[in-house]
Amino acid sequence: MIILIQCKDNVGLVAAISGIMASKNINIMSMREYVDGEAGQFFARLVCEQSADAQTLLKDLHDVLPGDALININPESQKKIIVLVTKEYHCLSDILVRNHFKTLGAQVQCVVGNHDVLQEICKRFDVPFFLINHKNRSKEEFEAELLEVIKKYPHDYLVLAKFMRILSPKFVDSFLMKIVNIHHSFLPAFAGANPYKQAHRRGVKIIGATAHFVTNDLDEGPIIVQQVIPVDHTYTANDMMKAGKEIEKSVLAKALKILLEDRVFVYNNKTIVFE
Image (cartoon, rainbow, N blue to C red):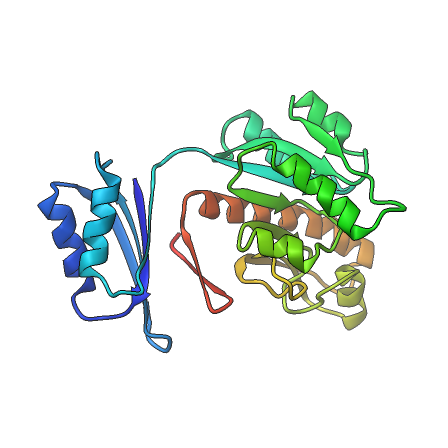
C-alpha cells in the first residue's frame, strides 16, 4: 500500500510515523519526505506492506500528526483514466499502445473526441470512443453531454491528450486536480495558441512541453513535468512543431507514470514530486 501524508511541519514527524508502523508490525519498504521551509509544510510518501485494517491505521496516524494532516492510504491497484482528444494522434496513440501492452499503469476506460478523426485508432485498440460534436452548440450543452459519458465509467483522472477546447470553470471545479493537460510549450513561456509560431518568431534556442493540472487560469495550473530540447536558427516553425510532438508524448507519459504511482503532491499551485 502507498501512504501519502501532508501536514504542518513539526519536530519528530518521521519518528511518529515510523513508530505507528512499528507498533502495527507493518514493514516500511520505502519512505520519502520533504519539508517546504517557507510554507512550513511536511510531505511524505511511504510504500508499506499491506495493512489488514487501513481505517484503524488512518486513525492512529491522525492521532500522532498535526490536526491539519491530510492522509491518503491507497492500495497498489491499477488506476483508471478517460482520455479527451480532438484531431492530433501522437499523444493518444502513445497512450493506447502503452495501455494495450499494460505498461501505462492504468486502464483507459474510454476516449472522448469532439471530432471523429481518432475514432478508427480507438477501434483498432478495442477502446470505446465517444464523439461529442461541439459545432452549433453552446459550451453548456457540449459539457453536459461530456459529463454524461464520464459518469458511465469509474476514473481517477481525465487526460487531455491534445484536447483543443477550453473547459468551463464549472466543469473544471468538478474535477479539481484530476484533469491533466499536455501543453506544447515550456510554460509559462508561450502560453495559449500557436506556441511554436510564437517561439519561432522569438528565435528561441530551446523548445519544450509541459504537463500540468488544469485550473481556471488558462495554462497556469500546477506543473507536473517539463522537458526541453535544443533548436537553432535552421528550424522552421513546422520543424519545431514536429520535434515538439515527440517531446509532448514523452512529457505526458512521464507525468502519467508519476501520477498513477501516487508520487505527486499539490500545494500552493506547485507540485512536490517524489520520483
